[in-house]
Image (cartoon, rainbow, N blue to C red; front, side):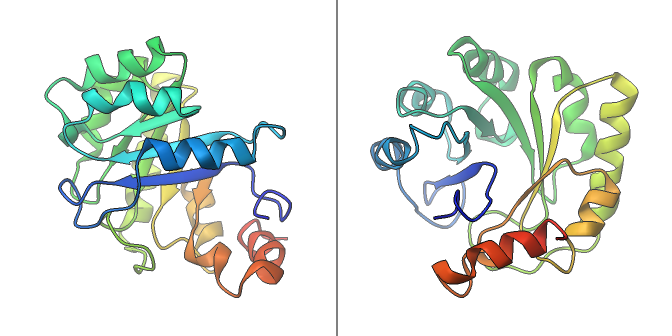
Amino acid sequence: MAEAAGADWLHVDVMDGHFVPNISFGAPVMRGLKTLVEETNTPFDVHLMIAPIDPYLEAFAEAGADIITVHPEAGPHIHRTLQAIRGAGMKAGVALNPGTPVEAVAPLLDDVDLVLVMTVNPGFGGQKFIPASLDKIARVRQRLDAAGSKATLQVDGGVTADNAADCVAAGADALVAGTAVFRGGPSAYADNIAALKGR
C-alpha cells in the first residue's frame, strides 16, 4: 500500500533493546516483508540500530536488504563493517545520532553510499524533530559536496509535511517518515506522501 501510494523506498528500522531502548524485529520478519515487494523491486533500506553489528550483517543481506545503514558507535571497526556491507553486494550507509558530530563521517566518505542524519534520538517513532538538526544536515551536505561524494543524504526522525521542505533546502536527498506517512490509515497514505513531497 505504501508503494502504491508513492513511497520510493521502504525504510526498515531494526532495534535490539540494547543499542536503543526498544525492540522491533529481526531478519526473518524482514525476509517476509521483502517477499511482498519482490516484483516491484522497491529498495529495502535497512537501518540497523543494534550492537554488536557485525554478526548480523549476513542475515540481513540474505533477508533481502538493498542498503544497510549502521551507527559508528555500534561496533569497534566501522570501516570494516561498511566494507563488509559492500562486499555482500549491498549499499552501505552510516547514521549520525543527534549527539554524533558531523566530523565522524569525514573518514568514512569513501566507504559509504548513504549518510543518515537522525533528527531525533533513535528508538521510538512519533518523536518531535530537533530543529537544530537543520544546521547539521547543511553541514553534512557541505562535507559531502566538498569531498565530491555521491552519497545520498537521508534524514530520519520527526519528518513531517511541515519540515520536509526545510530538510530538502538544507541539503537532504531522501526523507524517512513513519508517523507522517501512516497516520490516518491506508486511505490517507497517498495524500500523506504527496504532502511530504510538496505536491
